[in-house]
Each structure stands twice: as structure tokens, then as C-alpha cells.
Length: 128
View 1 (spheres, helix red, strand yellow):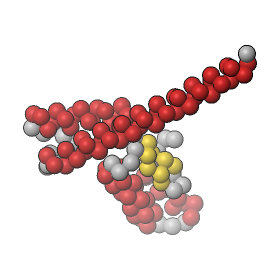
View 2 (view 1 turned 180 degrees about the vertical axis):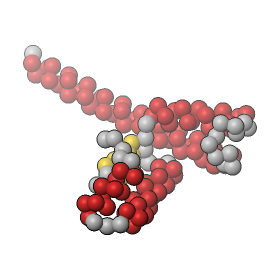
View 3 (view 1 turned 30 degrees about the vertical axis):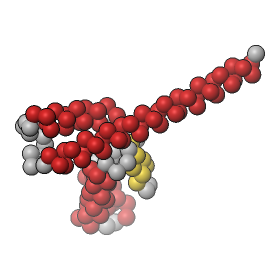
């Protein structure tokens, strides 16, 4: 599912329901801010948002971020961090959470692969 840009969403909703764009923008901004805060907290690798779907942590991006954060903790170089005022404790927390979430995603993928493999083998055995 491709994400919808906020300004396009606001205009479409405002026209459809005949509400001022400013009111719709405030509501949409609040909802997007809520979604962003859930993602920032790294509480889970999958975040369900009603009527929008499920946001899934991209393992490639998470692995890259994890490597970046570990490098920052080791070297102390904050030049490439978007928010240069982040503390070492916050970075350590993010490293810990990302490690846990990536492991959880790997476990899910391994389990799904095993189930698929069992189904394949059972179907192959039935054909014989």
C-alpha cells in the first residue's frame, strides 16, 4: 500500500465532506503524529492503524539504522544523525529495541518458511 501524501488527503476529504481544509488538516496531522510516535517508540515490528492498514518494519532499513546507531555509540560521532541532541541512553535503547525487533521478524520468517516447507512435503507425499 502506497502512503498518501497529507496535502492530497486533506483536499480530497475536505471536498468530499464539505469541511474546511484547516479542520481536516488538524485531524489528519494529529493522526499522522500519533502513527509516527508509535513507530518512533519501536514497541512492535508491526503497527496496526485502523482503516489505514498495518505498517511493517522494513528489515533492511532497520538493519542499516542498527549498524549506524552502533557505530555512533562506539565512535561518538554524531555528524550523520538527524537529531544531534540524542543522548547515548536513547541510542542504546534504540539499538536494544531494533535488535529485539529484527530477531522477532527473523523468527516469524523462519517459522513461516518451516510451515510452507511442511505443506510442500506433505503435498509431495500425497502425490506419491
